[in-house]
Image 1 (cartoon, helix red, strand yellow):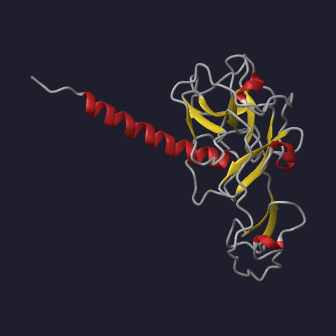
Image 2: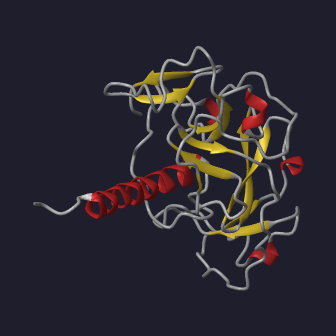
Length: 242
């Protein structure tokens, strides 16, 4: 008689969940525009998509909801866990995707004590303390080491209220950055709906948080065939890779 397969099955499930979480962690890191702030290597291209280049890096978002900062539940969202890439615990991963459950303040880690090397291309800064025109200044090295651009300042946030009316403060290992959104938490999206991390239909538009809708054409439970699920103005739809 063979022994019980229980321990082996449980081990395999844990490995699968760990692998999935690692992939999604990198995806959400870059989907939310955290690459230059918190990610240190390239993510898997698990979401890519979107027809044409966004003008000025913008994409349209309909119907910003301004209510709701309390923690929202995730009914019908099994295996819900907090993402390790978000130190505030606001962003969770479940079987239906990456979603925002709360709008707790991000930890403020800036300024850092370390300095960047001079590039010789008109550096705006060498350390975070040089970036003082606004709160939460961060000195960033050029994203492309072969480019003829110097270090530059970026400014972050710790609270949604420090961002624009159609934005939320997305937390990361350096504090937070303002990204576009039409919801603050799951509670803003109606019964059974989630405030999901997404990418816009237009390539290069940056990451955002948006509510699920009744007329979404795709999602985790209904993936696109040879395409990617992106947010197009007021619903999710399938688009060819960028």
